[in-house]
Image (cartoon, rainbow, N blue to C red; front, side):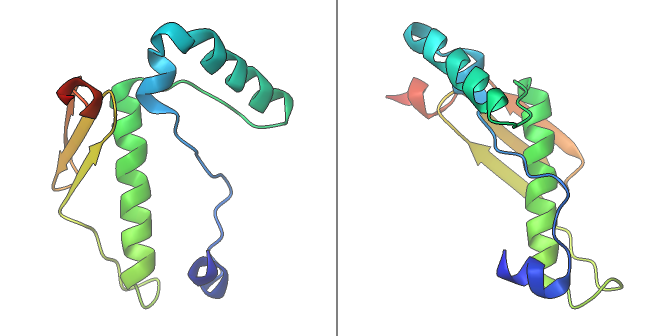
Length: 111
């Protein structure tokens, strides 16, 4: 946040992901849905994302953070060559930040 403030690049929107647990919370689905309701009542915009959407948002966030960390100005762009995201219910991989692979097998399934 400090570097973004220094560079004058504060985002208009901040996404907080709830990912696979919100899509399929099993025995606590009612609690997961209630959390979304409570956050919405508090003024937040909440959306449950499909796995492909989640992977794209993660890739955009990683690209933004990577460039913000390494860039010395608007003419100095840096893009990571890949991304791996792993959670309890899914895994996302993006090659060259163009070709997404989304798998329905997360850390929870390996236990």
